[in-house]
Length: 226
Image 1: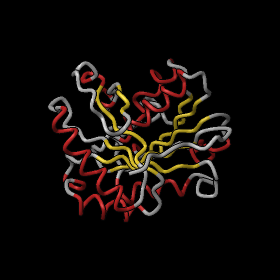
Image 2 (image 1 turned 180 degrees about the horizontal axis):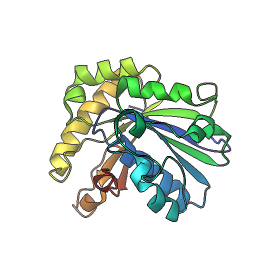
Image 3 (image 1 turned 90 degrees about the vertical axis):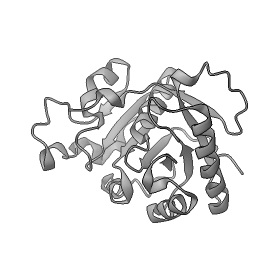
């Protein structure tokens, strides 16, 4: 097994993709805040046109108070549901023109991942890294074959973030067992593991025997419903 390492580039550009309830938005938010705490200039981009109910839109104002620049419509700017709720902020198309680091939260599923095509110059960017967030507890990625098939259908994947969880019912045993299956598939496919993710509430669990680096995250999305 090998780990994902960022090259020494002038900035970080990462696009987070994943199935429904994989936790991709949580990971994207926490990654952006992590970089911001390092004193970096960070833009977080909402590219989710698939699910209007749980997006960055309702969190935009609070995240900007934390110092992030967020390219997304606010709740006030979005009215109704359906196509209106799923509209893309025009500024997102030119996201790579922003200064500093860019974190892109891409719509869930294979079709959602295609939204990345709407970002001007994304696939031509030497800085772009596509990060697949995998939750072993979800039906679409609930065994090795399904994980393998899902990742292959995504097309390009530069690294995997293992994020097995069951919300508030997550336990260390569930997380470790699920993530181990993800690690096996990643090794088979020759895709590096970037890190694994745990809810910050589990930080004091006493578990120290982690095979892969761990990032503890704060959960924002439970409050993101319209």
